[in-house]
Image (cartoon, rainbow, N blue to C red; front, side):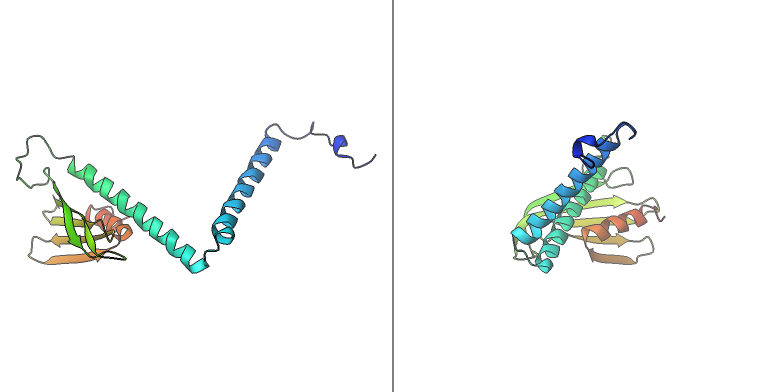
Length: 168
């Protein structure tokens, strides 16, 4: 019978094409199913869904920022004195129970404080507020001027890249 499924010949199709196409279709089906579950089955309004996604992105960015700052603090040389602050001796402190404003409610959570000296002698103090997942950056310039910015974790990463001289 013409057009029968059993008559389909795959001999002239390049190797891997069928498995790639099958994999692509499987991925697309999974992606559509995940979106359907999140939006339709749970009946979350679009605005609420976007707010949840934004909160998750902020949470990830804050965790990533804190991990980077912890890594910078670990670069402290063994020759540094416990209270020494220099370009090779960054300092890090965590206040475990600090009362702070939150995104939804106020309460106590860790306050993370990092202090580093930039290459041009600026003192950079970074405070990470865990409850609001926000960052306060204070830059004390050598000429006495001070820059204070309360920023999102994403903007804090951009600002630290700029202060580190990675302006591109």
